[in-house]
Image (cartoon, rainbow, N blue to C red; front, side):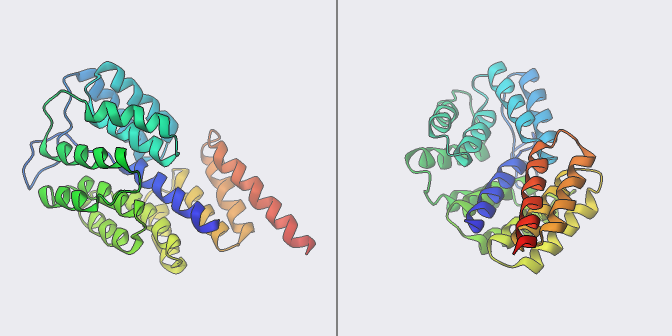
Length: 265
C-alpha cells in the first residue's frame, strides 16, 4: 500500500508539472499551445505558474476557465483529462478527453501527438503510449516540457527506471529544474532507492526554500522510511509557510499519530 501511495503521488506530481510553452514548432524551439482566445491563454499561463508551485486545485480551476473561454483549447482539455485520470474519475476523464480529441482547431504537430496518445488512453487507461512520448521528445529535443508527457506515460506502465532517465534529461535543459528534482524524488521512492530520493528532494528544497511543497515532499519521504518525527516537522514547515496547505496538516497529524503508536509499543 505504501508503494501504491508513492506511485499515486508521483503521477500527481508529473501531471502537476506538464505545461507547454507557445513558440513555433521546430526542433530547437518549444511546443506550441494552440488557442484562438487571448484570455484563455492568459488563464492557461496562470495555471502554468501554479502547477510549478504545485497549487493543484487552483490550477485546475484556471484550466476549466480557459476551456470555458475557448471550447477548442486542446491543451486545457488534455491537462484536465489527465488530471482526472490520475484521480480515477472515469466520467470526468472521458468528458475532457473527448473534448480534447474533438477539438476542431488546427493543432501543432506536438499537440497532434498528444492527441494520438489521449485517443489510445480513452480506449485503455493502462495503454502503453510511450512511443508517442518519444516522438514528442524527438520533435522538441531542446524543450524540457516535451519530456514530461513521456515521463508520465512511462509512469503509467510502471517503467520507473526509464522515467528517471527521462527526468534527468529534462533537468539538464530546464532553466529552473526544481520540480524535476521533486519528480525524481518520488520516482526513486517508487523504486525503493531512498538515498537517491533524499538527494533529489534536498536539491528541490535548496532551489525553492520559500515554497511549501518541498517540505511536504520531504515529509512524504520521511513517512516512507518511517521517520515520523522528521515527517511531522517537515509537514508542519509546509503549513508554517502557507497555512492553506491543509493536506500537509492532515499528513502532519497522521505522522504524529504514528509517533504515539510507536511510543506505545
